[in-house]
Length: 493
Ligand code: NAP
Ligand code: MG
Image (cartoon, rainbow, N blue to C red; front, side, top):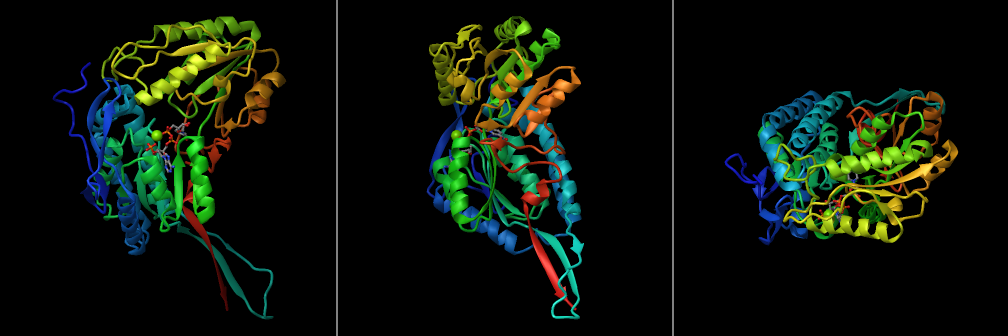
């Protein structure tokens, strides 16, 4: 597999703190891998509490110095737009780093990670100049005769700790830093330990764009050490986290104790509901795309499929045929349709969940998921659950290319099944029957409901979860509230 060639960019291997490339104070490092070959790519700093303290102190000093938050909003906007331009100019380098380190197809690295990041930055840059408060009249003129001028203004929340997962390393980082910076906050970002390369380059490019030192820092390290130290640091005002529900609960508990602001984007087990009028070909294509996109490593992956009984066999067997036809390989190979899982540990977890699903009575319709290769591959897998048994793969997030499919007989029944999950991130409905589509849109407990599409996200469209899929919304107009505090001002005259 052509993993290393003359086009391979230099691999970043330091953190980025206070405008400088920074190793861990104790000199500790850990390896990161190319998941398509299993080979080590480089060593990355393993940040300790001391390193985290340095990054947060730096970020706090940058916030307090007010060069960033008091900068004219149009200048903050200009810098964010400049960063977007620089990212665009470094498309090939960033996409190559992402595919090397994460394993996804190079076309997706370009289109989603890099172009998506550019789009998000440009959209969020615009909010810098549109943060506003309100004025209003008070009803209690006390002491008598006093007049009041009352208003609210929105002020940046302060130092933001951003912690992101490994499935979309660059894009998830930008989802956090772009609005935080637009609102005048300063940021310490911790990428996932498996995939830190593009986040480090992002901070270097921000520096090149002219962001003041300390405004945007990147620390690398393990979740339980570096991540935990960042979350509980007393100078951090807000934690914005995307990752598993398990870790989200730990972070949420810590933030509740410290009374820190927290936004949590967590796991999912998103249902895909195919109604009986749906063209089976369209359903096969849509449902396969909903689960196999990004190798199933998507928080909104359509991992539970509910198909009207009259077309269940045709649709489910069709998806199994799609799965069996998918070519696995290096993300750099033009023939590849699906890359590896991000790590050996994750591959083993996904394989374990498939085996467990079979043991519990699921019927595997696709080829053997195991792949004899050095990389961390798992073949896309379709599990039929005709008897609607409470299999673990129906309840638990796999975060891999594994679909479990159930038949249903009527709308109320499928709605109840779809909602019988601790999660509520996304859901899709496939039909041209408007009344039924709207009944499902109304009834589904999910932060996003798609009709005749799935996994569609946009900077203007709020995104987040119901139930154990999280707290808060990203993107859109609501994002400004997430990175600002409301300050009421009351002037007597
Ligand atoms: P994860 O294990 O929860 O890790 C996410 C991030 O949190 C990583 O940077 C991780 O560091 C860090 N972390 C781990 N333990 C921590 C702790 N005790 N304190 C502070 N930080 C800690 O999730 P993942 O396996 O990387 O990503 C997959 C999960 O993300 C899935 O559940 C998926 O559904 C979810 N996700 C949700 C969304 C959404 O928007 N709702 C989007 C994408 C992914 P390490 O890398 O060192 O472990
Ligand atoms: Mg992890």
